[in-house]
Length: 393
Ligand code: GLA
Image 1 (cartoon, protein in one colour):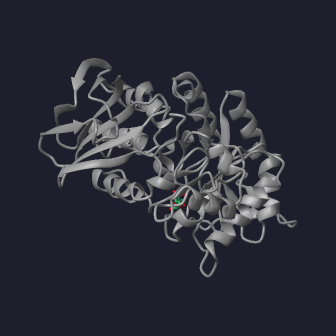
Image 2: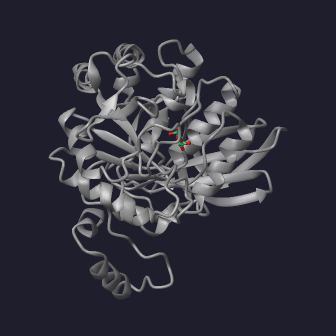
Image 3: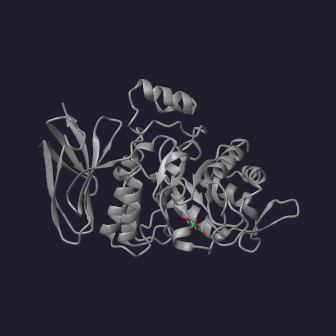
């Protein structure tokens, strides 16, 4: 269905929606037609941990680590340099990388990242300057997209600083089209923080779009971004994803239980999983969280459904559910409060219309057995339990 919709224009999609009686519900949207990011992008981005302190050696060492420490094999593919790699434009307008921090140039660095079995991403801004005051792409969209393609870039994040007076849907469409004509398949990451209702236009423009302001490495910020992205679940699907911002797992501001919750919630929301820590030096606990194969499989499920809240039995207690390709569901029992609470999930209410199901705990990696109609357990404060639920028919 999604692939079919991709090939149709919006008008045809509206007619189909009418025919299916979907008017009144959110209309299925056409998706950006570049065939990329059919599951949520996974990778690493420099910003959350390193800010402007980016360099060729950091990116090379990060790629080396990701190839050797299990990150690449767990699915983290895109190594993305965020802001501050660029310093100026040449006389002909070509964007110029910092020659001190990137002495061999961006193309050579991309080739190095590729040699590690990884893909390479870069950052720009739709306005005149990036958020850190480096040259933006405004007026150079076609030229920059061609430059990135010539450097073998696989992923571009486009920010929205210094864009006063510009029209976000138009500017991002301009860059989408520039990428489409660059001669290289490039994932397009829109970053206007949800300020211009991206849910109305971004699915036809980019592969992922930020829904929120920047995440901070603390529990309350993670929940704020979660709550905003949760409101737009119906528009996500293969090739087009809500982005509640990059991961903070391993950056030190939350407990490991809170990071497990952060990671589980991003996975059940089918959010992009862009690690934002120092993967060269991460602890064993951080690695275990980021590389949990059973949680990653929920995020990467090919059905591409964004999970939703199905029950809120108390203000700080939520039951989340995500439909999976195999007919089962994933469940997250979220305790937002600081005291342990018993949380119960009912299979029917979670969208699984069977009387009994087999349950697996995705953090203890234990088969819990067969359950009739409900599963209940005590969840610690600021924590989750994440389950995979398979129907018994
Ligand atoms: C904005 C973005 C961040 C990061 C910085 C870089 O704040 O939202 O993700 O890219 O700019 O300056």
